Amino acid sequence: MESPALNNEYKRILELSEFDLDYSSLDEHFKELSKLAARVAGTEISLVNIIDSYTQWTVSKQGLDLETMPREDSVCQYTIMDDNHLEIKDLSQDDRVKDKFYVAGEPHLKYYFGIPLKTNEGNNIGALCVLDTEEKQLSPEKVELLKIIANEIVTRLESTKQMHVLQTQINKMKETHRKVSHDIRGPLSGIIGLSELIKEQGKENKLDEILEMMDLINKGGQSILELAEEILNSSDEEEPADNEFNLQTFKQKLGQLYLPQAKSKDVNFKVSISDKNVDVPFLKNKLIQIIGNLISNAIKFTPKEGQVDVAMLLQTKNEGNKLHIQVKDTGIGIDEKQLKMIRSGNSESTNGTSGERGFGFGLSLVQHLIDNLNGELKIKTEVGKGTTFEVVLPA
Image (cartoon, rainbow, N blue to C red; front, side, top):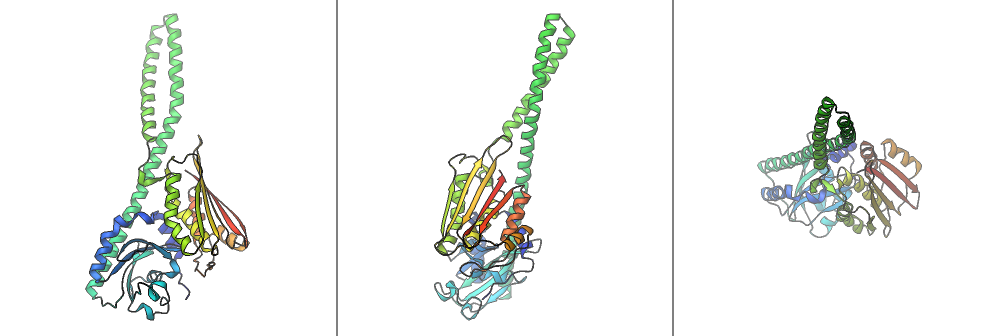
């Protein structure tokens, strides 16, 4: 059965990208809430799910070992269509999901109750759901408690988003300090050198007043130069570990997040990095959202036993570091009409090589995020042979 698409889907995934979430590191934020939800509902299972263009990410779970599944296979894709809640008494009798692997096979789930995670801007970015292998009856009081838990999950997500905004502002301030320090250090060094030269000439010509003035200029210049050096050194300190990647850690993160997707479709997936600058840190800023969407898209449109390769290198230059990332697949390719729509931000929904439902906005979102970061996206594609995405971002 065809998956639903929200009328405000692009707005929804655009706001989700602003949260800049690392889906594999959120469990600590929500594990006590997912556990509480299961206890309140009296169910075996509870999940906190975030849904992007391609994937349902289970960021916290109780009673079921689940991390990710294609969006079109999930029940929560229907929950985010509603502003209240979705209850399915018997999943095996619901035409939308009765043939899904978790209903038709182990663990043979039967009962589902889901509440959308609605942001302050009114977008449903995921769902809190409780499930069981037996039918349940939730009282109005229990439903209200579950809604309170869902609201707390959103509050914590919003707080995380604000922390990212604050960290970005701090990074911009540090970069400004670094640039100012570099800019003033050169002229100050020149002034100090000139004052030393004039002092020498003043001594030879016994110009005591000039010598006194030059001594003051020299001391003042040295004082400012020391301050500039102090600011420069402080701004050159490494960023907090939770706000940065290097090539090695980013490679590990992409494997952790997307290798399960590739394996579930029997697609070969490989991430490689340059052997240079592997330990140089760069900000996480939107990297998972940008490269993750490209990888999910590549997996979606690559047939069984096909190949998806990611290659990354970091160039370090005086004018600024640049991160180069290539995502290459052996999929079905993109025709000229689709390319134009991607560039314009009006992509149409298409189906993948195994019937996966597309929602038409993943690549348009990538283009938007790259433009906002003053980066560059190049697309090389040949219908029937595959596509290569090349991303260059300031790091």
